[in-house]
Image 1 (cartoon, rainbow, N blue to C red):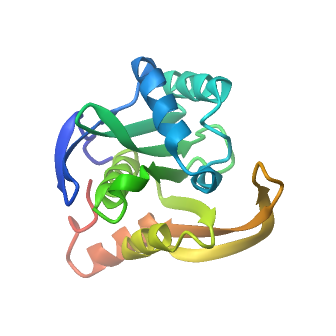
Image 2 (cartoon, helix red, strand yellow; image 1 turned 135 degrees about the horizontal axis):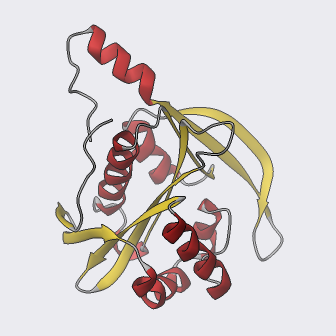
Image 3 (spheres, rainbow, N blue to C red; image 1 turned 180 degrees about the horizontal axis):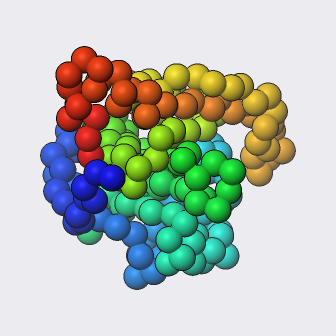
Length: 197
């Protein structure tokens, strides 16, 4: 198993320096404020509506239980992004993790999403996951580009898979990254440290 990352840590982005830190119950109000300012379409990245207090409370419980690890991107004391690694060691797929990211509109395209994604990716490697998945609506081209830049590839298209609050259905694309395969290829080329947290 790779080294476990420590937080908080500072990351330079085009939006300025952000602090990346672990989310806890103390962040509930700040995360709810962040979630309620997101465009409704962005919430379709997530399986549940995190702008609802009961959903956020359940999320905090999952963090405390250890099933979810969430990182917050904080700028000037305000949450501007959230990245989450979800895994279920009791399922048929304990080697697979899912990444979920959302970023405030005012810092998009400035490296905050990429920084969060890289941190979550490194956490996934640190806990020994072999495969990572991410899902989003097909029109989220910026987010798709970030994940493709990290080596994720399209694995599935789920038609009419989510319905927004207005009742409109949206297609979801599922991207996957076989971390174990990439790591094995790098080791075969004599680059064992190329895929590290």
